[in-house]
Image (cartoon, rainbow, N blue to C red; front, side, top):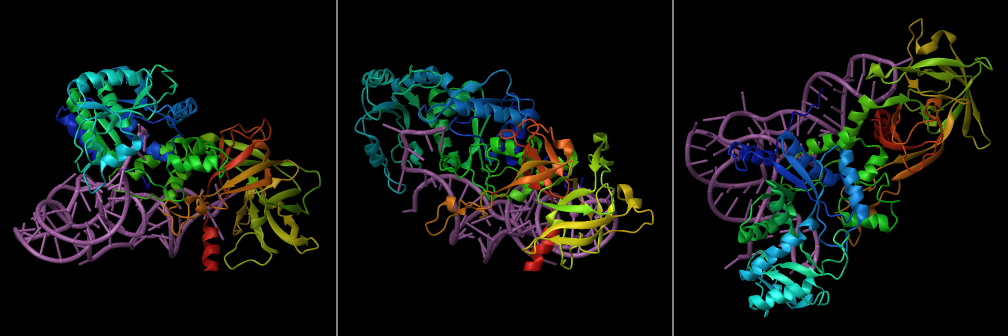
Length: 563
RNA sequence: UGGGGCGUCGACAAGCGGCAAGUCAGCAGAUUUUGGAUCUGCCAUACCCAGGUUCGAAUCCUGGCGCCCCAGCCA
C-alpha cells in the first residue's frame, strides 16, 4: 500500500521504551484514561484513548478506565454509560474492573488528615472572592491567608465538621500550605477540598466535601500503580503540584507526561462548545451525525478502525496543531473501500424510458459486490424499460469536460447496457423531466462486442423495482477552517455551515437494500459511503446517512471552470 | 526580569552532530464498466531570526522574535 504508515513512534513511546530499558517500573506499563463523566467523548478523546490503551497493548501492560468523578454537580450517569459504550466501541478492553476516583475518597481523606498533622494543609475560611484576591496575579505574588497557621487540632476538627456537613457551601475549604509567592499559581496554597452539600452518583450523601482535581488525580494514579500518567499540555503547570502531594505523602510516584490535544479543522473539540451546540439546538443531540463526538461519528458511520488509524497518523507531540479533517476522511474512505458493499442508489432521480426495450420485460443483471474483495460475491440487479439516473448525469448543453449523458451521446449503464439519448422531455417551464433513450441489446452486461468505447458509466435503478428512501447528506459542521479563532465579536456558533445537512426525501435505492439494518455501511457507487441510521430507520424503510463522499474529479473540474 | 510550553512543506510529522523520511492536501500523467480504487511523477538547497562552536548544525551554545497555556471552591 502506497500510504502505509510504518508503526510510528513518538516522544511518549520513547520515554516508555527508555523506562522499560532502565527497568524504572520493573518493566511495567500501566496507563489510564480518566474522563470526567460530564459530557460525551469526542475524537480528541479518541486520540488519548488510542495513546493510552495503545501503549498498554504494545507493551503488554494495562490501561485503566477511570472516571474522574470528583464533582457531583456536573456529572451524570448518562455520561458514564455513554463513555463506557464509546471506549468499548473503539475496540479497547479495560479488563474486569472500571475504576472511579470516588472509590478513593476514604483514602484521600486519611491522607488529608496526615497532611494537616504534618502542618502541610489547613482549613481556610476566606470566601471564594477573598481567596482570589489573596492569590495575587500572574505578575504579583499572593498574600498568605489569615487562617494559614491554625493549630493542627483546630484544622482537624474543622475538616471533620466540613465532611459532616456542618458548614455552608463556600464557607470553608481545605488548602495545601505551599507557597503564596510561587510564580506558578497552582502552588499558591491550592484548594484540596470544597464543601458541596450534594449527593454523589456513587457515594450518595456520605460526603459533604469533594476533592479537587489536583488533590485527587495524582493520588488516584499512585493508588492504581500507574506508571505513565498521560494528560494534555494544559496540565503541565500542574505537574509540580501533582509531584508535591505525592512527595509529601511519600507514596508511589507515577510520572505525569503531557502531550498536545487534538484540534480538527471545520469542527470544535471542547466539551463546553459541544454542550452549547446541543443545548442551543444547533444540532439534534450529542449523537447528531455532524458532531465530532464518538457517538455522532458512530451514528454517521465512521468505523472504529478508521478512527484508530487516524489517531496513529496524526502523531503525538507537544506542539499545538490543527489537523486537516481531510485526513480523517481519507482514513474512513480507505477503510470502507475495502469493506463496504457497492450498491446503486439514485439520489436525485431523472426518469429515463428506454424506448426500444420491451414493455414488460425484466432482466436480472449480475453486479459485483466489491471489486476490492471478490469474496463478497455478486448479486442480481433488476433492469427494465423505465429507470432512473442521477439528474447530474445529464446535461443538455454539456460543458467541455462533461462526458456523461447528453443528447446523441452513448454511455454505459453499469452492469447493464449502452444507451443513447434520443429525446429530451421538458415541462412547461423548460425543466428536463424525462429522457428517451435507446439501448443496444448487444451490450448486455456493459460490454460491446465490437469493442466500441463509451466515455462514461452511470449508475441507475429500475423504476418499478427500486424503493424510496430518505438520505441525509452531511457536510462539515463549520464552514470556517478554525471556528475557535473568532474575529470581531463573532461567536464560534456564527461559523456553523448552513449547509451541514441536506435531507433528500425521494431517493431511489436498489431493492437489495430494502431490509438493510441499522449501522450497515454501503458504498453508493459514484456517490459516497452511507450508513443506515440507527435512530430513524424502520424495518423495511432504512434512512441513510452519508459518511463521506467519494473523491470527485468532476467536482474539481467544475470548480476550476468557475474560477 | 511572573511561571510553563512550543516554533521542520498548505496541513500533520520523522529527524536526537554527517545527503531534510512518510502521510494528507495540491498539481501532472497512466489505468479503469465507479470522474471511485490503483499506479507513476512533481511538490522544504532548507528547518522562526541572528550570532557562535564544529571539518560538518534542523540537531549543541548565546541572544532575539513569534505563538499557546495558567489568576475556578472546574477537570
